[in-house]
Image (cartoon, rainbow, N blue to C red; front, side, top):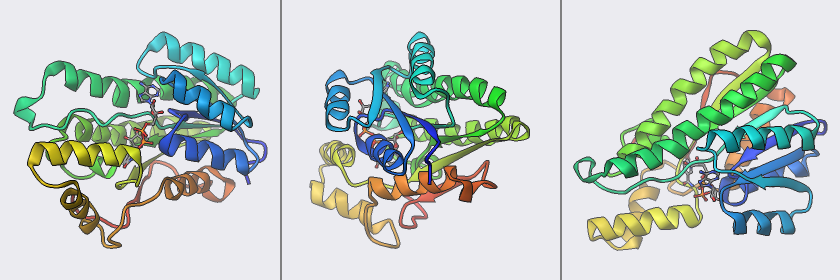
Length: 254
Ligand SMILES: NC(=O)c1ccc[n+]([C@@H]2O[C@H](COP(=O)([O-])OP(=O)(O)OC[C@H]3O[C@@H](n4cnc5c(N)ncnc54)[C@H](O)[C@@H]3O)[C@@H](O)[C@H]2O)c1
């Protein structure tokens, strides 16, 4: 389906990013990943020799520029950016959040998304085709108690997506964002553990609060997200742009 596509996935060494990178490679795409975690990156590249990749902290402008140059050279061009990197940020009431923790969360989730989207926009506008997928969250659709910096950053991703879609659409470039619900895996385990610690609930209780918030009463999988990204970036998704695609088993609140 993506046979001739050249794909860059940020934070591709684990979680949703790695699952998405593997899914693109399995569908015939050439795939480049970057990640800030050297161990995770070398483990991923060793285990999946079909992937290429490099170290990069997406919140660092010079590193992002150098990473895009390397990805472009390695892939022989670029068709798709999966702008996936994000961190959970602090779990605390707003009045207890330190400015540095706020800034660290914004640096990865928002500065990083901007820096990578900017490099991709420059390449894809010149090319006159391509697709960018930004990673928001259901936290970017509703308020998210004790996760204000994360929710604020993920709401901002939606504004970035709409505006980029307007700016790049006339050049033939599509921009969408995905809003995943809670994805089963290590990240949610960490979020649940932190919330249990802060609220005095057991981890099982916190887990039930999350699953009960969805009509389908379940977490979703990284593969659910990867499948959606593959569809919207494929020729079958050719008229989908400027959208916030929610993959969450249907939640109306968090
Ligand atoms: N997991 C969920 O439940 C969930 C729900 C909604 C949205 N999301 C979003 O999906 C995206 C991926 O989430 P995940 O759960 O796979 O994440 P994760 O916590 O599993 O991390 C994935 C990778 O991101 C890398 N990373 C962290 N900071 C980075 C940086 N500054 N530069 C480059 N790489 C960096 C990590 O090293 C790791 O390998 C994030 O944007 C996240 O906010 C996740």
